[in-house]
Image (cartoon, rainbow, N blue to C red; front, side, top):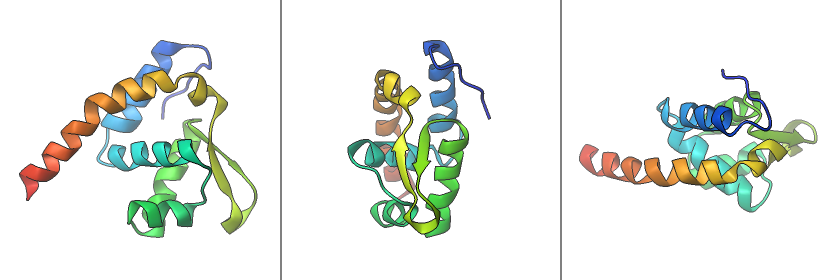
Length: 113
């Protein structure tokens, strides 16, 4: 995974493109970011909100945590996830990328039906 320097917009743009558009799980990762943006949640709450299995939500939250996009507080099942201070400082980049790729995700789903 990519290494990010806290103050670099270019690094954050590359990282977020990679995390959101560079894999099949990008849509769920973007949705997780938006859910945590409104309030901290644990993995079970994320799984329920996304309508996915617990292990799927856990996989995506680990990827986001590894890339310093979210941070955890607490232990085990009560562990809550928050946006990292670095991501909060670069949310304009997330919004820009998410607005570009989110409509594609909806169109792709329509084509698959």
